[in-house]
Image (cartoon, rainbow, N blue to C red; front, side, top):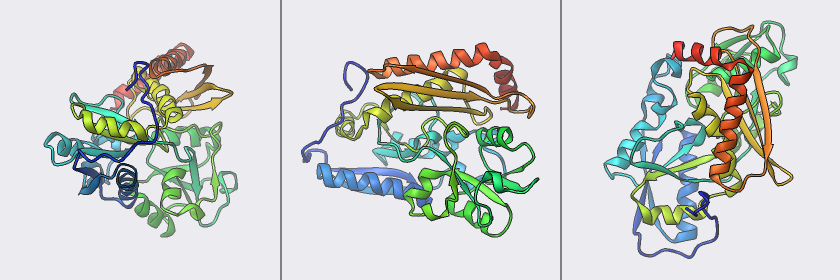
Length: 329
Protein backbone atom coordinates (compact mmCIF):
# COMPACT_ATOMS: atom_id res chain seq x y z
CA UNK A 1 0.00 0.00 0.00
CA UNK A 2 1.28 3.43 -0.83
CA UNK A 3 1.84 6.12 1.77
CA UNK A 4 -1.42 7.71 0.61
CA UNK A 5 -3.38 4.66 1.71
CA UNK A 6 -4.20 3.66 -1.85
CA UNK A 7 -2.64 0.55 -3.43
CA UNK A 8 -1.12 1.05 -6.84
CA UNK A 9 -2.70 -0.93 -9.66
CA UNK A 10 -0.43 -1.95 -12.49
CA UNK A 11 0.67 -4.84 -14.65
CA UNK A 12 3.08 -7.25 -13.00
CA UNK A 13 5.58 -9.83 -14.14
CA UNK A 14 4.96 -13.51 -13.30
CA UNK A 15 6.07 -14.42 -9.78
CA UNK A 16 7.97 -17.67 -9.33
CA UNK A 17 8.70 -17.58 -5.61
CA UNK A 18 5.24 -17.88 -4.07
CA UNK A 19 4.31 -21.42 -5.04
CA UNK A 20 0.62 -22.19 -4.77
CA UNK A 21 -2.31 -20.12 -3.53
CA UNK A 22 -5.51 -21.59 -2.09
CA UNK A 23 -8.70 -19.52 -2.44
CA UNK A 24 -11.47 -20.12 0.11
CA UNK A 25 -14.92 -19.64 -1.39
CA UNK A 26 -18.55 -20.29 -0.75
CA UNK A 27 -19.98 -22.99 -2.98
CA UNK A 28 -22.85 -21.10 -4.56
CA UNK A 29 -22.63 -20.76 -8.33
CA UNK A 30 -21.99 -17.02 -8.09
CA UNK A 31 -19.31 -17.36 -5.39
CA UNK A 32 -17.55 -20.04 -7.43
CA UNK A 33 -17.65 -17.83 -10.53
CA UNK A 34 -16.03 -15.02 -8.55
CA UNK A 35 -13.34 -17.29 -7.14
CA UNK A 36 -12.62 -18.80 -10.57
CA UNK A 37 -12.35 -15.28 -12.00
CA UNK A 38 -9.67 -14.34 -9.46
CA UNK A 39 -7.96 -17.74 -9.89
CA UNK A 40 -7.66 -17.16 -13.64
CA UNK A 41 -6.19 -13.69 -13.14
CA UNK A 42 -3.59 -14.94 -10.67
CA UNK A 43 -2.60 -17.78 -12.98
CA UNK A 44 -2.50 -15.77 -16.19
CA UNK A 45 -0.90 -12.58 -14.92
CA UNK A 46 1.43 -13.88 -12.22
CA UNK A 47 2.09 -17.51 -13.16
CA UNK A 48 0.83 -18.77 -9.81
CA UNK A 49 -0.62 -22.21 -9.11
CA UNK A 50 -4.09 -21.63 -7.66
CA UNK A 51 -6.69 -24.03 -6.25
CA UNK A 52 -10.11 -23.54 -4.66
CA UNK A 53 -11.35 -24.64 -1.23
CA UNK A 54 -15.14 -24.76 -1.41
CA UNK A 55 -17.02 -24.20 1.85
CA UNK A 56 -20.60 -23.94 3.08
CA UNK A 57 -21.11 -21.03 5.48
CA UNK A 58 -23.72 -20.50 8.17
CA UNK A 59 -25.29 -17.86 5.98
CA UNK A 60 -25.83 -20.49 3.28
CA UNK A 61 -27.36 -22.95 5.74
CA UNK A 62 -29.80 -20.71 7.64
CA UNK A 63 -32.48 -19.84 5.10
CA UNK A 64 -35.64 -19.67 7.22
CA UNK A 65 -34.77 -16.47 9.13
CA UNK A 66 -33.70 -12.96 8.21
CA UNK A 67 -29.95 -12.31 8.35
CA UNK A 68 -30.57 -9.50 10.84
CA UNK A 69 -31.98 -12.09 13.27
CA UNK A 70 -29.16 -14.62 13.07
CA UNK A 71 -25.93 -12.65 12.99
CA UNK A 72 -25.88 -10.54 9.85
CA UNK A 73 -23.86 -10.77 6.67
CA UNK A 74 -20.77 -11.80 8.61
CA UNK A 75 -22.24 -15.31 8.55
CA UNK A 76 -21.13 -15.52 4.92
CA UNK A 77 -17.45 -14.92 5.72
CA UNK A 78 -16.68 -16.47 9.14
CA UNK A 79 -15.89 -19.96 7.90
CA UNK A 80 -13.70 -18.54 5.14
CA UNK A 81 -11.77 -16.49 7.71
CA UNK A 82 -11.33 -19.59 9.85
CA UNK A 83 -9.76 -21.34 6.86
CA UNK A 84 -7.42 -18.36 6.41
CA UNK A 85 -6.51 -18.32 10.11
CA UNK A 86 -5.77 -22.06 10.10
CA UNK A 87 -3.71 -21.60 6.90
CA UNK A 88 -5.88 -24.04 4.98
CA UNK A 89 -6.40 -21.14 2.58
CA UNK A 90 -4.47 -18.00 1.68
CA UNK A 91 -7.15 -15.80 0.15
CA UNK A 92 -10.92 -15.36 0.37
CA UNK A 93 -12.97 -13.80 -2.44
CA UNK A 94 -16.10 -11.97 -1.31
CA UNK A 95 -18.91 -9.93 -2.72
CA UNK A 96 -17.82 -6.77 -0.92
CA UNK A 97 -21.34 -5.86 0.16
CA UNK A 98 -21.33 -9.05 2.28
CA UNK A 99 -18.13 -8.14 4.13
CA UNK A 100 -18.54 -6.55 7.60
CA UNK A 101 -17.18 -3.00 7.83
CA UNK A 102 -14.54 -3.97 10.38
CA UNK A 103 -12.57 -7.15 9.76
CA UNK A 104 -11.41 -9.28 12.71
CA UNK A 105 -7.87 -8.79 13.97
CA UNK A 106 -5.35 -10.56 11.79
CA UNK A 107 -7.13 -10.01 8.48
CA UNK A 108 -7.02 -7.27 5.88
CA UNK A 109 -8.77 -6.29 2.68
CA UNK A 110 -5.87 -6.53 0.25
CA UNK A 111 -7.67 -5.48 -2.92
CA UNK A 112 -10.96 -4.34 -4.39
CA UNK A 113 -11.38 -5.10 -8.07
CA UNK A 114 -13.13 -3.09 -10.76
CA UNK A 115 -16.82 -2.86 -10.08
CA UNK A 116 -19.49 -4.56 -12.16
CA UNK A 117 -22.89 -2.84 -12.52
CA UNK A 118 -23.70 -1.63 -8.96
CA UNK A 119 -27.44 -1.26 -9.55
CA UNK A 120 -30.38 -3.36 -8.38
CA UNK A 121 -32.33 -5.33 -10.97
CA UNK A 122 -36.08 -5.85 -11.32
CA UNK A 123 -36.75 -9.48 -12.27
CA UNK A 124 -40.20 -10.74 -13.22
CA UNK A 125 -41.63 -13.23 -15.72
CA UNK A 126 -44.78 -11.14 -16.23
CA UNK A 127 -44.12 -7.47 -15.55
CA UNK A 128 -41.75 -5.08 -17.32
CA UNK A 129 -40.85 -2.85 -14.37
CA UNK A 130 -41.86 -1.78 -10.89
CA UNK A 131 -44.41 0.70 -12.19
CA UNK A 132 -46.28 -2.00 -14.12
CA UNK A 133 -46.90 -4.20 -11.07
CA UNK A 134 -50.56 -4.27 -10.04
CA UNK A 135 -51.71 -2.84 -6.72
CA UNK A 136 -50.72 -5.16 -3.85
CA UNK A 137 -48.34 -7.28 -5.93
CA UNK A 138 -45.83 -9.46 -4.06
CA UNK A 139 -42.17 -8.53 -4.37
CA UNK A 140 -39.38 -10.61 -2.83
CA UNK A 141 -36.16 -9.30 -1.33
CA UNK A 142 -33.86 -10.24 1.55
CA UNK A 143 -32.58 -6.70 2.06
CA UNK A 144 -34.00 -4.14 4.50
CA UNK A 145 -32.40 -1.47 2.34
CA UNK A 146 -34.44 -2.62 -0.64
CA UNK A 147 -37.58 -2.92 1.50
CA UNK A 148 -37.55 0.72 2.59
CA UNK A 149 -36.68 1.97 -0.89
CA UNK A 150 -39.39 -0.12 -2.52
CA UNK A 151 -41.88 1.22 0.00
CA UNK A 152 -40.80 4.76 -0.83
CA UNK A 153 -41.43 4.05 -4.53
CA UNK A 154 -44.55 1.85 -4.23
CA UNK A 155 -46.08 1.83 -0.73
CA UNK A 156 -48.95 -0.36 -1.96
CA UNK A 157 -46.78 -3.40 -2.66
CA UNK A 158 -46.58 -6.49 -0.45
CA UNK A 159 -42.90 -7.11 0.20
CA UNK A 160 -41.99 -10.60 1.39
CA UNK A 161 -38.66 -12.11 2.57
CA UNK A 162 -36.55 -13.95 -0.01
CA UNK A 163 -33.49 -15.96 1.08
CA UNK A 164 -31.21 -18.41 -0.70
CA UNK A 165 -28.58 -18.20 -3.39
CA UNK A 166 -29.29 -16.56 -6.71
CA UNK A 167 -30.52 -19.74 -8.41
CA UNK A 168 -32.83 -20.53 -5.49
CA UNK A 169 -34.34 -17.05 -5.61
CA UNK A 170 -34.97 -17.28 -9.34
CA UNK A 171 -36.59 -20.70 -8.89
CA UNK A 172 -38.96 -19.36 -6.23
CA UNK A 173 -39.92 -16.55 -8.59
CA UNK A 174 -40.51 -18.96 -11.47
CA UNK A 175 -42.66 -21.16 -9.22
CA UNK A 176 -45.01 -18.22 -8.75
CA UNK A 177 -44.21 -17.44 -5.12
CA UNK A 178 -43.60 -13.79 -6.07
CA UNK A 179 -44.74 -11.43 -8.82
CA UNK A 180 -41.24 -9.96 -8.97
CA UNK A 181 -37.97 -10.03 -7.09
CA UNK A 182 -35.12 -7.55 -6.73
CA UNK A 183 -31.54 -8.78 -7.12
CA UNK A 184 -28.11 -7.26 -7.64
CA UNK A 185 -27.56 -6.74 -11.34
CA UNK A 186 -23.89 -7.69 -10.96
CA UNK A 187 -24.58 -11.28 -9.96
CA UNK A 188 -26.98 -11.86 -12.82
CA UNK A 189 -24.53 -10.42 -15.34
CA UNK A 190 -21.57 -12.41 -14.00
CA UNK A 191 -23.51 -15.66 -14.39
CA UNK A 192 -24.69 -14.87 -17.91
CA UNK A 193 -28.25 -14.25 -16.72
CA UNK A 194 -28.61 -10.65 -17.86
CA UNK A 195 -31.60 -11.71 -19.96
CA UNK A 196 -33.55 -12.24 -16.71
CA UNK A 197 -33.28 -8.51 -15.94
CA UNK A 198 -36.50 -6.78 -17.02
CA UNK A 199 -35.37 -3.36 -15.77
CA UNK A 200 -32.64 -1.83 -13.66
CA UNK A 201 -33.25 0.71 -10.93
CA UNK A 202 -31.25 3.84 -11.52
CA UNK A 203 -29.27 4.76 -8.44
CA UNK A 204 -31.34 7.88 -7.81
CA UNK A 205 -34.39 5.64 -7.23
CA UNK A 206 -32.76 2.64 -5.53
CA UNK A 207 -29.41 3.54 -4.01
CA UNK A 208 -27.06 0.51 -3.85
CA UNK A 209 -25.56 -1.04 -0.75
CA UNK A 210 -22.00 -0.09 0.17
CA UNK A 211 -19.62 -2.09 -2.01
CA UNK A 212 -22.35 -3.54 -4.23
CA UNK A 213 -20.99 -4.96 -7.48
CA UNK A 214 -17.35 -5.05 -6.28
CA UNK A 215 -15.21 -8.04 -5.33
CA UNK A 216 -13.06 -7.83 -2.18
CA UNK A 217 -9.98 -9.97 -1.62
CA UNK A 218 -9.25 -10.81 2.02
CA UNK A 219 -5.98 -12.24 3.33
CA UNK A 220 -4.08 -12.69 6.59
CA UNK A 221 -2.52 -9.33 7.29
CA UNK A 222 0.92 -10.87 7.84
CA UNK A 223 1.04 -12.33 4.30
CA UNK A 224 3.20 -9.62 2.75
CA UNK A 225 4.11 -11.63 -0.36
CA UNK A 226 0.48 -12.23 -1.36
CA UNK A 227 -0.44 -8.65 -0.48
CA UNK A 228 2.24 -7.43 -2.90
CA UNK A 229 0.72 -9.53 -5.69
CA UNK A 230 -2.89 -8.55 -5.02
CA UNK A 231 -1.96 -4.88 -5.00
CA UNK A 232 -1.76 -5.16 -8.79
CA UNK A 233 -5.43 -6.22 -8.98
CA UNK A 234 -6.69 -3.09 -7.24
CA UNK A 235 -8.93 -0.83 -9.34
CA UNK A 236 -8.17 2.52 -7.73
CA UNK A 237 -11.43 4.37 -8.64
CA UNK A 238 -13.46 1.49 -7.18
CA UNK A 239 -11.12 1.18 -4.17
CA UNK A 240 -11.63 4.85 -3.24
CA UNK A 241 -15.38 4.81 -3.88
CA UNK A 242 -16.00 1.78 -1.68
CA UNK A 243 -13.79 3.20 1.07
CA UNK A 244 -16.15 6.19 1.20
CA UNK A 245 -19.25 3.99 1.07
CA UNK A 246 -18.06 1.64 3.79
CA UNK A 247 -17.07 4.59 5.98
CA UNK A 248 -20.70 5.76 5.96
CA UNK A 249 -21.82 2.39 7.27
CA UNK A 250 -18.96 2.07 9.74
CA UNK A 251 -19.64 5.52 11.17
CA UNK A 252 -23.32 4.70 11.70
CA UNK A 253 -22.73 1.19 13.04
CA UNK A 254 -24.29 -0.32 9.93
CA UNK A 255 -25.67 -3.85 10.08
CA UNK A 256 -28.31 -6.01 8.41
CA UNK A 257 -30.90 -4.49 10.75
CA UNK A 258 -30.19 -1.00 9.41
CA UNK A 259 -31.70 0.07 6.05
CA UNK A 260 -28.64 1.97 4.83
CA UNK A 261 -27.36 2.66 1.33
CA UNK A 262 -24.18 4.35 0.11
CA UNK A 263 -22.83 4.74 -3.40
CA UNK A 264 -19.88 6.68 -4.78
CA UNK A 265 -19.33 7.56 -8.42
CA UNK A 266 -16.75 9.68 -10.17
CA UNK A 267 -18.01 12.94 -11.69
CA UNK A 268 -15.57 15.26 -13.41
CA UNK A 269 -12.61 13.95 -11.44
CA UNK A 270 -14.40 14.23 -8.09
CA UNK A 271 -16.11 11.56 -6.01
CA UNK A 272 -19.85 12.07 -5.60
CA UNK A 273 -21.07 10.15 -2.57
CA UNK A 274 -24.80 9.54 -2.06
CA UNK A 275 -26.18 7.92 1.08
CA UNK A 276 -29.65 7.11 2.37
CA UNK A 277 -30.98 5.92 5.73
CA UNK A 278 -34.41 4.41 6.31
CA UNK A 279 -36.30 3.58 9.48
CA UNK A 280 -36.29 -0.19 10.13
CA UNK A 281 -39.71 -0.29 11.79
CA UNK A 282 -41.76 2.73 10.71
CA UNK A 283 -42.84 2.63 7.05
CA UNK A 284 -44.16 6.19 7.36
CA UNK A 285 -40.79 7.64 8.41
CA UNK A 286 -39.14 9.61 5.61
CA UNK A 287 -36.09 8.25 3.83
CA UNK A 288 -33.13 10.46 4.79
CA UNK A 289 -30.75 11.30 1.94
CA UNK A 290 -27.47 13.14 1.49
CA UNK A 291 -25.19 13.79 -1.50
CA UNK A 292 -21.67 15.21 -1.24
CA UNK A 293 -18.98 15.74 -3.85
CA UNK A 294 -15.27 16.28 -3.18
CA UNK A 295 -11.89 15.82 -4.88
CA UNK A 296 -10.51 12.58 -3.39
CA UNK A 297 -6.90 11.50 -3.75
CA UNK A 298 -6.47 8.66 -1.25
CA UNK A 299 -8.31 6.25 1.04
CA UNK A 300 -8.03 8.58 4.05
CA UNK A 301 -9.85 11.36 2.20
CA UNK A 302 -12.46 8.85 0.98
CA UNK A 303 -13.12 7.69 4.53
CA UNK A 304 -13.41 11.30 5.71
CA UNK A 305 -16.04 11.91 3.02
CA UNK A 306 -17.99 8.89 4.22
CA UNK A 307 -17.83 10.11 7.80
CA UNK A 308 -19.08 13.53 6.68
CA UNK A 309 -22.04 11.92 4.90
CA UNK A 310 -22.87 9.85 7.99
CA UNK A 311 -22.84 12.97 10.17
CA UNK A 312 -25.14 14.73 7.70
CA UNK A 313 -27.67 11.89 7.99
CA UNK A 314 -27.58 12.16 11.77
CA UNK A 315 -28.13 15.92 11.55
CA UNK A 316 -31.17 15.31 9.34
CA UNK A 317 -32.75 13.37 12.20
CA UNK A 318 -31.13 9.99 11.82
CA UNK A 319 -30.38 9.24 15.47
CA UNK A 320 -33.82 7.74 16.25
CA UNK A 321 -33.43 5.57 13.13
CA UNK A 322 -30.13 4.25 14.44
CA UNK A 323 -31.62 3.60 17.87
CA UNK A 324 -34.51 1.69 16.29
CA UNK A 325 -32.06 -0.41 14.25
CA UNK A 326 -30.02 -1.19 17.38
CA UNK A 327 -33.21 -2.31 19.10
CA UNK A 328 -33.98 -4.81 16.33
CA UNK A 329 -30.48 -6.27 16.06
